[in-house]
Length: 438
Image 1 (spheres, one colour):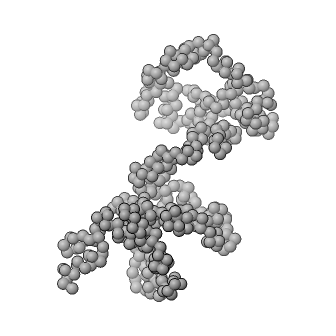
Image 2: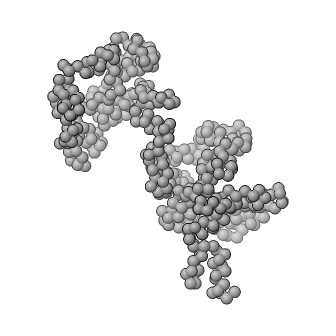
Image 3: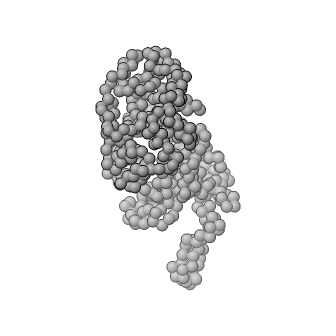
């Protein structure tokens, strides 16, 4: 193989190749390679990517290579459409099908047409599952020779595609193109449900599962469901007790060092994520994201049963139980059932009289932190919940939701006697007196 062609993957052949042997050894580090081109490219790690010294005369000069490729004597067959030249007449005939649009080779399985017979043979392996090209390093198999060639770069440590912005290198040009979108701020993939845009299709597909509620991976221990397999694998470590990273302050263990760093903000009081609307700070990025939905009114989590939307996954999960009727948590004092443990814990405080949250301004005590926070806004005058329609602000989220019904015309409270609907429960309660005579 000629030096300088390692970036262009070879065309596939119809017959499987022989298992390559490690016959090309690097004199610097002793690593062996199946192809000379991989060895020569690997040696750039030792001599520098822009140098040809120490390559034992294997690389011809760029000028000589260019002259050989462009020589009319070596490429006598010229395309009249685009002036490209070819060394063989058959290559010219194949090339001309690009201009004529001719695709004579058809797949009998799916009906797709191809210009080349070898391309059809490669495609047919999708249906047969045949993978004749095997990596001698790790044993992984591929349906196409070009895919094997790209995979071999991982073992050779070859990353030919470099980002000029940050210097990060990639094995494939597709990886570089995806990465460059980060610097350009390019977001071409749009969600049709909520209009949110993403830089990559795989991220869009992951996002769309929020709308569908699809969670195909279930934990056999606790029946908790996940969108992705890696989330399930990470969750199962909690059951196995595989938590190698420990907090030095309290001794609590976590799966990853990142989880430890986030947890330690409880001890340090650090809240690096600030809301641009109301100035409220949060210790975790996802908590900020959830909070900002109160300002924007965004509700990306949709119930597939009734179409009702929610701000977070927890709200959707709790709502699902209204359809199933599931209430597994029972109060030992009064026997009342609840759908979640958190709802049960909140209820139990009625019996115990527990009120741990005390207002320093007026001394009033509250059973729940949410009630305490809502109350404290009376003293601070804070109104973080803003209506997107008329810009009116409210101290409580439920007040905003109630107000927004003026704009939407929603009337969720229905009289069972006459069928009349109302926007607020108090209005319904007042109306029912007409029927009861109270």
